[in-house]
Structures are given as structure tokens and as C-alpha cells.
Length: 187
Image (cartoon, one colour):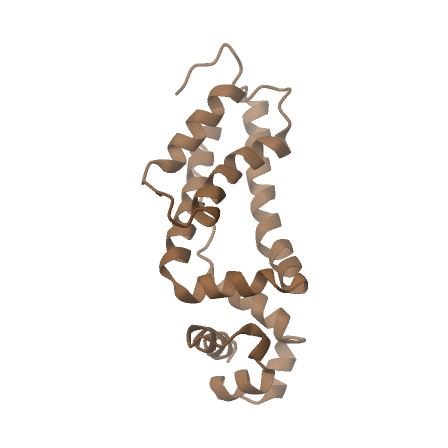
């Protein structure tokens, strides 16, 4: 039942229906369920929309755990892949644009999707500091922004920007060059 509702919302968005025009009644009709069925699971369309966004997102990658560099490349590659999917999917592009116009939806998306990814990245960077792969004086929040920001500029801010297969590796290696302890060598 839940999947039918999520797919119903996706279908409406795919058909170009703006978020502002999505009503619980219309979603219920599209999904072939009653409004009460939707309200038993979600308090309103904003909460439902966040679940649609989570469903549309690919799962987070498994990290190899072999080195900070390897884990960073896997994380950034997953962002590159999301960028490719967003560019080729009219529905995802529509969803992200509409999400930005709703502070409640953006806040829920940030708490449920963005924040956990940030925690994962910071954990990788902390491990890198602990293992000597990253200077101990580095501001990890800023380092996170440097890695992720470079990929997000390419995938989101520059929709015509090149997303070559080795982009994640280049971003990680170029950034690590300045963050690595002086005695370390590139692996």
C-alpha cells in the first residue's frame, strides 16, 4: 500500500504536477487508496514528499574501509552518480526545484538525508586524522565542505559541467594534496 502511494506521487510529479497542486485527495485517487490510508502513515503531504525523495535517492554506498582516500572517492562517486541521475531525470530535477521552495520539506530532507551523509563523511575524515592520513590541525567541517562542495558545484550548480568517471578521484587527490601531513606520500 505504501509503495503504491509513493509511486502515485512520483507519477503525478512525472506528469509535471507542481507540489503546490498535489493534494492528499489527488494522491489518494492516483494511488487507488482512501485519504485515511495516507493520513495513517503520513501527517501531511510535506512528510509524504520527503519519503518520496528518500525513495527516489539511490542508497548510500558501502565504504571499502581500506583508507580514508578510498572511502572519500566512493562517497564522492555516489554524489557524481546522483548528479548524473538528476540531470537525466526530469522528475528528480522537478522534485529538487520544488523542494527548495518549501522550508519544511527542505528541513525534513536535510535532517533525513543530508545530515546523515555529512556524519558519514565526518566519520571518514576523523578516522583519516586518527590514522595519520590527514593533518591533525585540519578543520573537519571545512574539509568536508571542500570535498563535497567541489562535487556539488559540478553536479548541481553547473548542470552543463563535465562529470567524467574519474572526477571523484581527481577531487579527492587534489584536495588531499593540501590537507595531507607533510611526510605523507600519495597512495
